[in-house]
Amino acid sequence: MPVKVPVSRGSLTWLQIQVQEYGGGLKLVLSQDITERERADTMRRDFVANVSHEIRTPLTVLNGFIETLGSLPLTEVERKRVIALMAQQADRMQSLVADLLTLAQIEGSPRPASDRWIKASALMQRIESDARGLSRERHPITVFLDPSDQAVEVSGIESEWLSAMGNLVSNAVRYTPAGQPIEVRWQTLADGTGEFSVRDHGAGIDAEHIPRLTERFYRVDGSRSRDTGGTGLGLSIVKHVVQRHGGELKITSEKGKGSVFTLQIPAVRVRKA
Ligand code: ADP
Image 1 (cartoon, protein in one colour):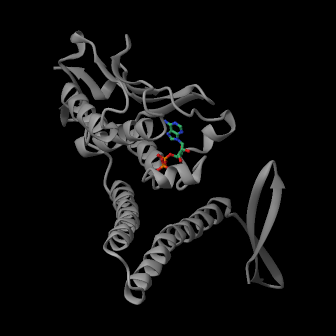
Image 2 (cartoon, rainbow, N blue to C red):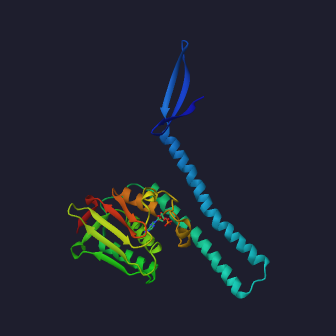
Image 3 (cartoon, helix red, strand yellow):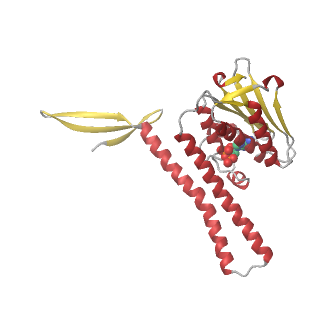
């Protein structure tokens, strides 16, 4: 029977130790570092627990409303209100399922090809109209693409880039009070790296939270996230997408002042058509 032993060496390491008869009265001791496997198992368990929790909460609320509708005589106004609240919970579950499917699809598909080119200007246009649609004129939004970058193209999977960029813009809108500006910008650096950034002047984030923001279901303010239709999966999708394309997500933020989220796209995936 193998035994699992925790060994402390800075961060926790797990060893699996197994003793086997070796013949001639000898014994063989096998030890294996199973830290990674343990970590993956824990992550999988946490993920399932989180998903179940995220689905159960709106389901419980929905069930409550169904019971109310079925058992209480409601006025037309009350009935409409209950139905609107039910729709809100159903939307929440729908967004969660959509984000889960996006994650699963990204994880299950091969590394994005580098010979499919998408116009940066087209991406920016789509993102701008998404941002304006989400903000509904509550925020002054500026989108900046230098005229010299009009012909820039990015390689990879268009739907993934749109999803990553769209998530950043959606967060900026959701975490910025009305009236505060949001800036979306494309820049091609001197070394050819592409940078897509979204700057907001919203709530900002304490430094201690920043390293954890891209964890699945990690939220700084759970109720604000949920009230604005957040799933807690947005930034993990963004990080995944950009890493698959060989790039990086950079976050700088100051509590109370606002944040800048930047997708750094490696020069090999950026060209001037
Ligand atoms: P959510 O769906 O909760 O927004 P995300 O993965 O997109 O999930 O973001 C994780 C958390 O990071 C959010 O819950 C929020 O606390 C914080 N966050 C993300 N973007 C911003 C932003 N632009 N300003 C302030 N906080 C942000």
